[in-house]
Length: 322
Length: 213
Image 1: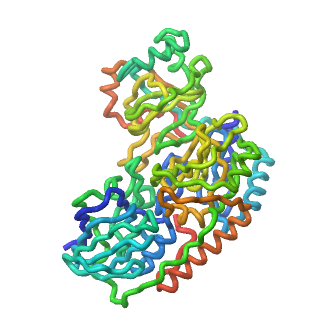
Image 2 (image 1 turned 135 degrees about the horizontal axis):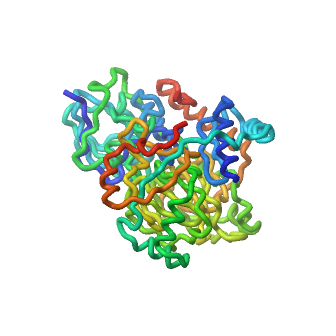
Image 3 (image 1 turned 45 degrees about the horizontal axis):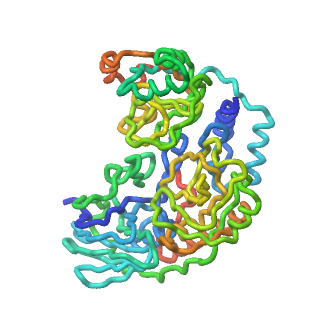
């Protein structure tokens, strides 16, 4: 009998995500992957998976699920979501072992947007372009390129929960403060006052936010000479500014190219905590050099590795093969 | 042509075995290089790329692949084709004649998977994009906008103009090689009737490849 996880009443934006795909941008394929890599890594580590293993990512809440396997170990991370098993409250940031027929429910958190539900042994989801990550807009990855639909079943690789004791960790302290960005590549498209103002101003995340982009609201940025650039490559974290003068932060599902000037790029170490900002949250930016960004990235990856290793997770591979 | 330099740099980096390169992606006049700073720091990478450029890039390479793509002009609707004719002051047939006698080059692939952005559109057909993109443009539509052409690989919104449609599918997710075109490929369009296009519709895309690598 196959081991399954049944989506009894999933919320609308549950998708399969891993650490993202690489190598296909030249064909127009977005990288996708978890909006908050640290939370993905911890969810996986709690159930004994590789930190980059594919898990279910959900927005605000995950809904109702049922285990159809002899036993199954799960963990929920990302924020203080309300996890209940058969109606009894359980903790996030703790592994939970369930047996056949048990139902669990993941309700919303007030301190986060994206949550992660990892399953010990991993999800048995086919890879497309080297990753099972879902890109809904182009129907790539996941289950048929879609968000998980009500009634869908996910195959699990393991039919039994691991024999090890349950694991638990305090939700890691998330650094507060401005989001660090490397200015450019088109910061010269903005007048000096606008650029300086941008780095001291307060912006707010608006309701227009999804896996592709977060639209911000705040002081209007002024372009020096127009807002059209010759379309060039973009990556998650790019802060692009269209004619409205309001910044748009490109996120994991962003297209591969864009035609608006980019005032800066939020560094990888800060993109996950940025992604967790709910509409209405006040945010600000701080410029760092490329050298500083590289040092911060190394500390961030080292921290992720220490957390994962403390939980006994297999070593994090900084460079994935292939 | 600056895009030829972009393509040449892309090839040079691929051939260099420079460590720490995750992937590269060309666009019109720039090359995106994604790298792992754990392996190569940005200064070393920039130095290495500058040396490649200073050493001279091979922008003239033996002609790459070339395609002849059948197009039923004015299909599924000729509204855009007539609008292009009116805007440019030409007849419908003149627009078709210019478009189908041009050799385009795939400048890069992007926006959505498998979409070839085509350079080489004659200035007579340059025209601004629509102010508002239209949703639901179908796979196979052959379009122009700005100074470029494109072939729609999957249903998507677009602010460009539909000149016709082809039976070729630029994105074939179920095939081993899902992408029909590659950056640097050359493309010509051949006018066919809607009936001829129907007959060609079952043909594999590779049948329209004139010159391989």
